[in-house]
Image (cartoon, rainbow, N blue to C red; front, side, top):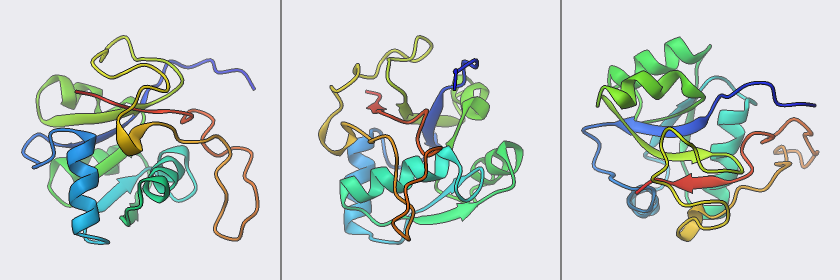
Length: 156
């Protein structure tokens, strides 16, 4: 499969959220296990599986809220109905406008639009790497999982 898009997947929070960095987010999630909810563009999508794999590696428990797509997801986070969103670039204009804060991007390279994050393999703490090929809960390998989410890069 060839990647023909320039979508950048990322993890965003409202600008008013208490988490300034991904590290802050992970520390708080460890203290409040299962109390932080996050939305994605649906169950089994790359944004969903990337966060599930990241949460498992970071040792945190989050509550997943699936949405029908980016429009519903962005409305929910802007409206304060969820605390965190994992999506492709649907969040970009809202980050640029200062309504959302980008905590991390997923991919094998730094993003050119938000270059503040470390390069591949240089993430901090639990943000280092999200392996390709996440396993489903039943243990079966999903070849589509995390194609775009090989690395999770924290922005500073």
